Length: 318
Image 1 (cartoon, rainbow, N blue to C red):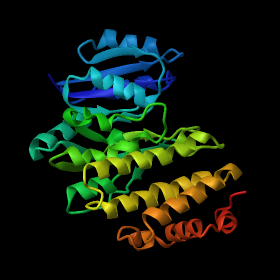
Image 2: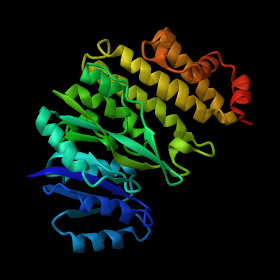
Image 3: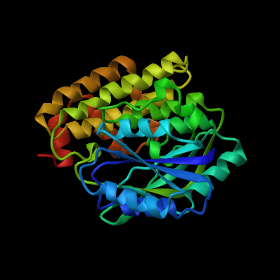
Protein backbone atom coordinates (compact mmCIF):
# COMPACT_ATOMS: atom_id res chain seq x y z
CA UNK A 1 0.00 0.00 0.00
CA UNK A 2 1.17 3.52 -0.86
CA UNK A 3 0.79 6.37 1.58
CA UNK A 4 -0.78 8.71 -1.00
CA UNK A 5 -2.52 8.30 -4.36
CA UNK A 6 -2.72 11.42 -6.52
CA UNK A 7 -5.53 11.25 -9.09
CA UNK A 8 -5.19 13.40 -12.22
CA UNK A 9 -8.07 13.39 -14.77
CA UNK A 10 -6.85 14.38 -18.25
CA UNK A 11 -8.79 15.82 -21.18
CA UNK A 12 -7.50 18.18 -23.90
CA UNK A 13 -4.63 19.65 -21.88
CA UNK A 14 -1.60 18.86 -24.03
CA UNK A 15 -0.21 22.39 -23.54
CA UNK A 16 -0.55 22.27 -19.75
CA UNK A 17 -0.15 18.63 -18.75
CA UNK A 18 3.65 18.58 -18.54
CA UNK A 19 3.70 21.40 -15.99
CA UNK A 20 1.19 19.53 -13.86
CA UNK A 21 3.04 16.22 -14.04
CA UNK A 22 6.45 17.86 -13.48
CA UNK A 23 5.16 19.24 -10.20
CA UNK A 24 3.97 15.77 -9.16
CA UNK A 25 6.97 13.63 -10.08
CA UNK A 26 9.37 16.01 -8.31
CA UNK A 27 7.93 15.77 -4.81
CA UNK A 28 9.96 15.77 -1.60
CA UNK A 29 7.80 12.81 -0.58
CA UNK A 30 8.70 9.27 -1.69
CA UNK A 31 5.83 6.84 -1.00
CA UNK A 32 3.13 7.81 -3.47
CA UNK A 33 1.64 7.11 -6.89
CA UNK A 34 0.24 9.44 -9.55
CA UNK A 35 -2.81 7.92 -11.26
CA UNK A 36 -3.21 9.69 -14.60
CA UNK A 37 -6.63 9.03 -16.13
CA UNK A 38 -6.92 9.77 -19.85
CA UNK A 39 -10.63 10.55 -20.15
CA UNK A 40 -10.82 9.88 -23.89
CA UNK A 41 -8.72 12.92 -24.73
CA UNK A 42 -8.45 13.43 -28.55
CA UNK A 43 -5.27 15.53 -28.43
CA UNK A 44 -1.64 14.61 -27.76
CA UNK A 45 -2.17 14.06 -24.02
CA UNK A 46 -1.69 10.27 -24.19
CA UNK A 47 1.77 10.63 -25.75
CA UNK A 48 2.73 12.95 -22.90
CA UNK A 49 1.38 10.47 -20.35
CA UNK A 50 3.34 7.64 -22.01
CA UNK A 51 6.51 9.70 -21.89
CA UNK A 52 6.16 10.36 -18.15
CA UNK A 53 5.33 6.72 -17.51
CA UNK A 54 8.49 5.63 -19.34
CA UNK A 55 10.60 8.06 -17.32
CA UNK A 56 8.87 7.55 -13.96
CA UNK A 57 7.44 3.99 -14.02
CA UNK A 58 7.51 3.73 -10.22
CA UNK A 59 5.39 6.86 -9.81
CA UNK A 60 3.08 7.21 -12.80
CA UNK A 61 0.14 4.80 -13.16
CA UNK A 62 -1.51 5.48 -16.57
CA UNK A 63 -5.17 4.64 -17.15
CA UNK A 64 -7.46 5.07 -20.17
CA UNK A 65 -11.23 5.28 -20.42
CA UNK A 66 -13.96 6.59 -22.69
CA UNK A 67 -14.80 10.24 -22.22
CA UNK A 68 -17.18 10.80 -19.33
CA UNK A 69 -16.10 14.08 -17.79
CA UNK A 70 -14.10 15.17 -14.75
CA UNK A 71 -16.24 13.36 -12.18
CA UNK A 72 -16.22 10.14 -14.15
CA UNK A 73 -12.41 10.22 -14.40
CA UNK A 74 -12.06 10.93 -10.67
CA UNK A 75 -14.36 8.04 -9.77
CA UNK A 76 -12.54 5.74 -12.19
CA UNK A 77 -9.12 6.63 -10.84
CA UNK A 78 -10.23 5.99 -7.26
CA UNK A 79 -10.97 2.35 -8.14
CA UNK A 80 -7.27 1.81 -8.82
CA UNK A 81 -5.89 3.90 -5.95
CA UNK A 82 -3.63 2.00 -3.55
CA UNK A 83 -2.92 4.90 -1.23
CA UNK A 84 -4.10 5.34 2.33
CA UNK A 85 -4.88 8.95 1.39
CA UNK A 86 -6.01 10.54 -1.88
CA UNK A 87 -5.23 13.94 -3.39
CA UNK A 88 -7.09 15.16 -6.49
CA UNK A 89 -5.18 17.40 -8.90
CA UNK A 90 -6.74 18.83 -12.05
CA UNK A 91 -4.49 18.44 -15.08
CA UNK A 92 -4.33 22.16 -15.89
CA UNK A 93 -3.19 22.98 -12.35
CA UNK A 94 0.04 22.30 -10.50
CA UNK A 95 1.27 21.90 -6.93
CA UNK A 96 4.24 22.84 -4.76
CA UNK A 97 7.09 20.33 -4.51
CA UNK A 98 6.35 19.68 -0.84
CA UNK A 99 2.55 19.43 -0.89
CA UNK A 100 2.51 15.68 -0.23
CA UNK A 101 5.13 15.84 2.49
CA UNK A 102 3.44 18.67 4.37
CA UNK A 103 -0.08 17.33 4.07
CA UNK A 104 0.78 13.74 4.95
CA UNK A 105 2.93 14.82 7.91
CA UNK A 106 -0.03 16.87 9.20
CA UNK A 107 -2.33 13.86 8.80
CA UNK A 108 0.00 11.62 10.80
CA UNK A 109 0.80 14.26 13.41
CA UNK A 110 -2.84 15.10 14.10
CA UNK A 111 -4.30 11.68 13.32
CA UNK A 112 -6.53 13.41 10.75
CA UNK A 113 -8.73 11.90 8.08
CA UNK A 114 -8.71 15.12 6.04
CA UNK A 115 -6.00 17.77 5.66
CA UNK A 116 -6.79 21.09 3.96
CA UNK A 117 -4.21 23.43 2.43
CA UNK A 118 -4.63 26.85 0.84
CA UNK A 119 -4.73 27.63 -2.88
CA UNK A 120 -3.45 30.24 -5.28
CA UNK A 121 -5.71 31.31 -8.12
CA UNK A 122 -3.45 31.89 -11.15
CA UNK A 123 -4.82 34.62 -13.43
CA UNK A 124 -2.71 35.99 -16.30
CA UNK A 125 0.44 34.71 -14.64
CA UNK A 126 -0.34 36.26 -11.26
CA UNK A 127 -0.74 34.17 -8.10
CA UNK A 128 -3.73 35.46 -6.15
CA UNK A 129 -4.40 34.07 -2.70
CA UNK A 130 -7.80 32.38 -2.38
CA UNK A 131 -8.51 33.27 1.20
CA UNK A 132 -12.10 32.45 2.10
CA UNK A 133 -11.11 30.39 5.12
CA UNK A 134 -13.41 31.32 8.00
CA UNK A 135 -11.81 30.29 11.26
CA UNK A 136 -13.92 28.27 13.64
CA UNK A 137 -12.77 26.38 16.73
CA UNK A 138 -14.88 23.46 15.53
CA UNK A 139 -12.77 21.87 12.78
CA UNK A 140 -15.85 20.37 11.11
CA UNK A 141 -17.67 23.69 10.86
CA UNK A 142 -14.48 25.35 9.63
CA UNK A 143 -14.19 22.65 6.98
CA UNK A 144 -17.74 23.21 5.69
CA UNK A 145 -17.13 26.95 5.50
CA UNK A 146 -13.85 26.48 3.64
CA UNK A 147 -13.22 26.43 -0.10
CA UNK A 148 -15.30 23.45 -1.38
CA UNK A 149 -12.74 22.42 -3.99
CA UNK A 150 -11.71 18.75 -3.84
CA UNK A 151 -8.24 19.67 -5.03
CA UNK A 152 -6.82 21.26 -1.89
CA UNK A 153 -7.60 18.33 0.38
CA UNK A 154 -5.75 15.17 1.35
CA UNK A 155 -8.53 12.70 2.10
CA UNK A 156 -8.53 9.28 3.71
CA UNK A 157 -9.45 6.85 0.95
CA UNK A 158 -11.94 5.06 3.23
CA UNK A 159 -14.05 8.23 3.29
CA UNK A 160 -14.19 8.47 -0.49
CA UNK A 161 -15.34 4.87 -0.85
CA UNK A 162 -18.78 5.69 0.59
CA UNK A 163 -21.29 5.42 -2.27
CA UNK A 164 -23.08 8.70 -1.56
CA UNK A 165 -19.80 10.61 -1.87
CA UNK A 166 -19.05 9.56 -5.46
CA UNK A 167 -18.67 12.60 -7.70
CA UNK A 168 -21.68 13.45 -9.88
CA UNK A 169 -21.01 12.25 -13.43
CA UNK A 170 -22.06 14.23 -16.52
CA UNK A 171 -22.65 17.14 -14.20
CA UNK A 172 -20.99 20.45 -13.37
CA UNK A 173 -20.50 21.86 -9.84
CA UNK A 174 -19.42 18.39 -8.74
CA UNK A 175 -17.36 19.65 -5.79
CA UNK A 176 -20.10 21.56 -4.00
CA UNK A 177 -22.37 18.51 -4.34
CA UNK A 178 -20.22 16.28 -2.11
CA UNK A 179 -16.99 17.80 -0.81
CA UNK A 180 -18.46 19.76 2.16
CA UNK A 181 -20.09 16.50 3.31
CA UNK A 182 -16.76 14.64 3.53
CA UNK A 183 -16.43 15.92 7.08
CA UNK A 184 -19.42 13.82 8.17
CA UNK A 185 -17.26 10.73 7.71
CA UNK A 186 -14.09 12.09 9.34
CA UNK A 187 -12.86 11.84 12.93
CA UNK A 188 -10.56 14.87 12.78
CA UNK A 189 -9.60 17.51 10.21
CA UNK A 190 -6.37 19.54 10.00
CA UNK A 191 -5.62 22.81 8.24
CA UNK A 192 -2.31 24.00 6.77
CA UNK A 193 -1.71 27.72 6.37
CA UNK A 194 0.66 27.21 3.41
CA UNK A 195 -0.45 27.87 -0.17
CA UNK A 196 0.44 24.56 -1.82
CA UNK A 197 -1.95 24.31 -4.77
CA UNK A 198 -2.03 26.47 -7.93
CA UNK A 199 -5.45 26.69 -9.59
CA UNK A 200 -5.26 27.98 -13.16
CA UNK A 201 -8.22 30.15 -14.16
CA UNK A 202 -9.04 29.47 -17.81
CA UNK A 203 -11.63 31.09 -20.04
CA UNK A 204 -14.62 28.92 -20.82
CA UNK A 205 -14.80 27.09 -17.51
CA UNK A 206 -18.20 26.80 -15.87
CA UNK A 207 -17.00 29.17 -13.14
CA UNK A 208 -15.99 31.83 -15.67
CA UNK A 209 -18.71 31.51 -18.29
CA UNK A 210 -18.78 34.02 -21.16
CA UNK A 211 -22.07 32.85 -22.65
CA UNK A 212 -25.24 31.25 -21.34
CA UNK A 213 -25.44 27.47 -21.12
CA UNK A 214 -27.99 25.19 -19.45
CA UNK A 215 -25.15 23.55 -17.51
CA UNK A 216 -25.21 26.58 -15.21
CA UNK A 217 -28.40 25.11 -13.78
CA UNK A 218 -26.56 22.00 -12.59
CA UNK A 219 -25.88 23.87 -9.37
CA UNK A 220 -29.45 23.23 -8.20
CA UNK A 221 -29.02 19.46 -8.27
CA UNK A 222 -25.64 19.82 -6.60
CA UNK A 223 -27.07 21.68 -3.63
CA UNK A 224 -29.99 19.26 -3.38
CA UNK A 225 -27.53 16.39 -3.24
CA UNK A 226 -25.40 18.11 -0.59
CA UNK A 227 -28.35 18.87 1.67
CA UNK A 228 -29.69 15.32 1.32
CA UNK A 229 -26.39 13.89 2.53
CA UNK A 230 -26.54 16.06 5.66
CA UNK A 231 -30.19 15.16 6.22
CA UNK A 232 -29.54 11.44 5.79
CA UNK A 233 -26.66 11.66 8.26
CA UNK A 234 -28.92 13.50 10.76
CA UNK A 235 -26.57 16.47 10.62
CA UNK A 236 -28.62 19.18 8.92
CA UNK A 237 -29.70 20.95 12.11
CA UNK A 238 -26.24 20.64 13.64
CA UNK A 239 -24.64 22.47 10.70
CA UNK A 240 -27.57 24.58 9.53
CA UNK A 241 -25.70 27.89 9.96
CA UNK A 242 -22.76 26.64 7.90
CA UNK A 243 -24.99 25.20 5.18
CA UNK A 244 -27.00 28.40 5.06
CA UNK A 245 -23.74 30.27 4.50
CA UNK A 246 -22.85 27.97 1.59
CA UNK A 247 -26.22 28.73 0.02
CA UNK A 248 -25.62 32.47 0.40
CA UNK A 249 -22.09 32.41 -1.03
CA UNK A 250 -22.38 29.84 -3.81
CA UNK A 251 -26.04 30.11 -4.80
CA UNK A 252 -27.51 33.49 -3.90
CA UNK A 253 -24.34 35.45 -4.67
CA UNK A 254 -22.01 33.57 -7.06
CA UNK A 255 -24.56 31.61 -9.11
CA UNK A 256 -26.90 34.59 -9.43
CA UNK A 257 -24.07 36.74 -10.78
CA UNK A 258 -23.28 34.08 -13.37
CA UNK A 259 -26.95 34.05 -14.45
CA UNK A 260 -27.42 37.85 -14.33
CA UNK A 261 -25.90 38.85 -17.70
CA UNK A 262 -28.25 36.57 -19.64
CA UNK A 263 -31.95 36.98 -20.25
CA UNK A 264 -32.32 33.20 -20.06
CA UNK A 265 -30.80 33.27 -16.58
CA UNK A 266 -33.38 35.52 -14.91
CA UNK A 267 -35.78 32.62 -14.28
CA UNK A 268 -32.93 30.77 -12.57
CA UNK A 269 -32.25 33.73 -10.28
CA UNK A 270 -35.94 33.80 -9.41
CA UNK A 271 -35.64 30.12 -8.54
CA UNK A 272 -32.67 30.88 -6.30
CA UNK A 273 -34.67 33.53 -4.46
CA UNK A 274 -37.52 31.06 -3.95
CA UNK A 275 -35.11 28.46 -2.58
CA UNK A 276 -33.60 30.94 -0.13
CA UNK A 277 -37.05 32.05 1.02
CA UNK A 278 -38.15 28.46 1.48
CA UNK A 279 -35.07 26.92 3.11
CA UNK A 280 -33.43 29.89 4.82
CA UNK A 281 -35.92 32.79 5.14
CA UNK A 282 -33.71 34.53 7.73
CA UNK A 283 -30.50 34.15 5.73
CA UNK A 284 -29.54 37.82 6.14
CA UNK A 285 -29.08 37.21 9.88
CA UNK A 286 -26.54 34.43 9.31
CA UNK A 287 -23.61 34.88 11.70
CA UNK A 288 -21.00 34.42 8.96
CA UNK A 289 -22.80 36.54 6.40
CA UNK A 290 -22.92 39.43 8.86
CA UNK A 291 -19.12 39.63 8.65
CA UNK A 292 -19.12 40.12 4.86
CA UNK A 293 -18.32 43.56 3.46
CA UNK A 294 -20.96 46.17 2.60
CA UNK A 295 -20.72 45.72 -1.19
CA UNK A 296 -21.23 41.98 -0.88
CA UNK A 297 -24.33 42.49 1.22
CA UNK A 298 -25.74 45.06 -1.19
CA UNK A 299 -25.40 42.61 -4.08
CA UNK A 300 -27.12 39.83 -2.13
CA UNK A 301 -29.89 42.15 -1.03
CA UNK A 302 -30.60 43.45 -4.54
CA UNK A 303 -30.65 39.90 -5.92
CA UNK A 304 -33.07 38.74 -3.24
CA UNK A 305 -35.29 41.76 -3.83
CA UNK A 306 -35.09 41.06 -7.58
CA UNK A 307 -33.73 44.51 -8.40
CA UNK A 308 -31.91 43.10 -11.42
CA UNK A 309 -31.88 46.29 -13.50
CA UNK A 310 -30.37 48.33 -10.69
CA UNK A 311 -27.80 45.64 -9.96
CA UNK A 312 -26.75 45.52 -13.62
CA UNK A 313 -26.19 49.27 -13.58
CA UNK A 314 -24.14 49.10 -10.41
CA UNK A 315 -22.03 46.23 -11.80
CA UNK A 316 -21.98 47.77 -15.29
CA UNK A 317 -23.48 44.70 -16.90
CA UNK A 318 -25.10 45.38 -20.26
